Length: 101
Length: 516
Image 1 (cartoon, rainbow over the protein chains, first blue to last red):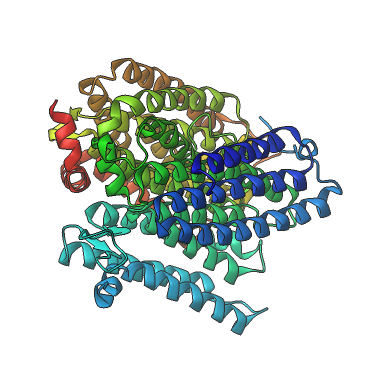
Image 2 (cartoon, each protein chain N blue to C red):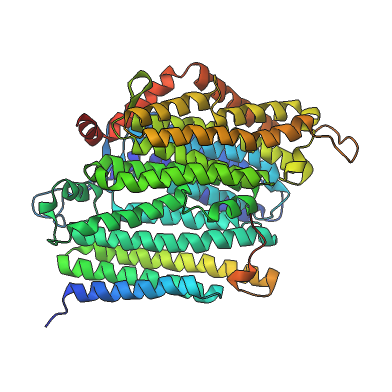
């Protein structure tokens, strides 16, 4: 009564697409960051599902690395958002447009 | 069991960088608030790592896999290939990365002195960025490739946004971060499918499946390999800043502290090409019929968009961003000319390596001048270059030489490099791309000449600004870059032989692919 790997793959593809849509459609930087996190977690799900189906330990280890990297990335991202909030008073991607051309 | 001493030997440049990085941070705590020698420590670390690499290269030629596993964890009877390979190709990119960083550190230290109080953090981050580049150069496993690329990306975001009280710097960093995290998520997604197909994260194992789809773990899914590879390519193209994954680069280049811009324009690009060549040419050349078209498109777009968008830029750092996108397009032209032969029997990969070698020196020379001008005038706008010929003949004349080399005018290094790449393209069946390359190269004269016109013929409205005092570091870097630009241009044979040997070291598969 195990769930076939295809189902996991489909679920993670759907989650990944929701993340991509969030990045493209939402204007608040915090929401964009959350969408990126959703994309990364969808990827983790694929790794785990593939590793489980293949009996491969490497992919499980990869997920630990991936979680750590995502944490480091979001730490840097939030620091940037705080800095931009201090200088602009807003965190909308549309307002961040001093650089152009 | 892995042999611990051999890991220590083959990782010695990286270990030196780690130790140096920690020393810089510790020393920074020690002198907190006072003037310190963090920059000198970083320079010494880089030099030591460079020496270690050269010693390794000379005393231990050939290919040395690190983290090879034949223990009980590996699949029945087979050894797991090394996750990191220390070979000529790795050494070549290690040397380029370390040399480039050295030039950036020397030309940029006075620039950074007045602008940030966090010197320890800055130099530690630069050292960790070089470490990440070295790891990318030798990565031979999807896990190591992904981690090294992420490592370099995260350090680059922080370095770009380093001047955190400058709104522009933060904005550039945030844009870089947003584009970067999306493309790296896409790259990881592609890698997860590669694992699903191949049942291994090891690049040689995946390459064996690419050659022989019967080995695939999931039958019928082998045609997922190409979309998965395309996603991985997107992640690498983002690091190299190839069109259409380039939108971050003009903003990040303009906003970052100028030494960081100089670093970004050579370091991640060279490391990205190391991964690209090892992965696609070295391992997946059997699928070349499928990825050549996509890469050809990226190459075409980069050459055209880079050179055309540079025409209208009023900020020299931003112009250099588009110029470096175009240069990356020329490098990619060599990658897609598989099997092409050019000058002195140089093959297409050798032509790319030779191009990258000349690009590193020429571009860093140009950036040393840009840093010096920004220090003197406080600006990187075109107007800051007005009358530079009168204010500092050394800077003005050398910038002209670097620009001429970037355009590809004989007898400079850039000419030989472009000749090699276009030659490979013509013999490798990419004639239309070579024609586009030559035509866009002509366009590039216009925007480089815009700066030259300001320097030589621009009349200053606000009186006669005095001469610019050029620091020792800048003079040294400019002279080294000038020397390399001239020597490689006039006497390219040893460098071509070097590039050719390095190219042969990773691509035995390429020789086979070139044969048919």
